Image (cartoon, rainbow, N blue to C red; front, side, top):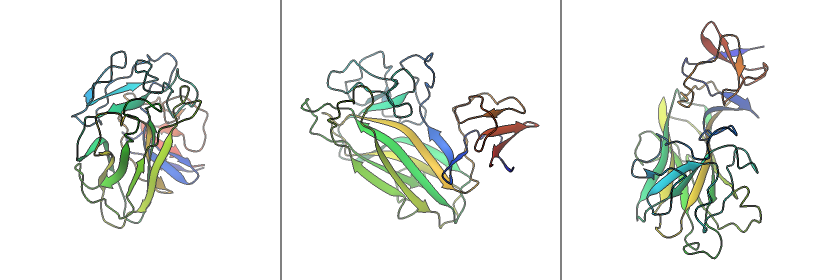
Length: 270
């Protein structure tokens, strides 16, 4: 059995198929007891106005965090990506942008402790909110993701640290239960001596009519590495000697769980 010592603030590393997740934004709400409308998110572009999901999110230039949304007849009403087909658990983010000819970053997060020579993966799950044959549904969201050294849009830190996707209108018969989620992702090898960078989700020349989309499970991973990144979604440290999963739930000791001993956090490797 082996353990990897984590930064005292880190509570987010677990392993799957050789990839260690070092940051995950699932927007919370991972309980049936959580309200349908989620809270404001500090990593969202400050020119997007937060609107509580109990209100109308249809004026443009705004976003909301919710388990599902049924106040716009032009939108699908399906739930998040984390818990498919369960609309009572898990938040996701809906973006209703203003029109612009520019590219704007709608979500960004700093990742630290990067190491030259390691391979990273950045992925986002996204969905077109518009139902077919509704006003503006022909305006398809064009999104990109990138990893940049600074917090402003600039050249990615590697040639392959960029990907884009045009979101089609879904004609899935189940999209009112679970949105038709599409993955946007890339892998890259870090060949520079850079210790920190920003992961970004970008809107490419958004339109005011239509162009409404959802985001969930924004994930940054390292392949077999030991990079640690602060996860700001947990305010309390777990009790000494206990194991927890990514969402802070008690689990039996297992590979990938967070183990606390003498006030220090470890990742159980096997």
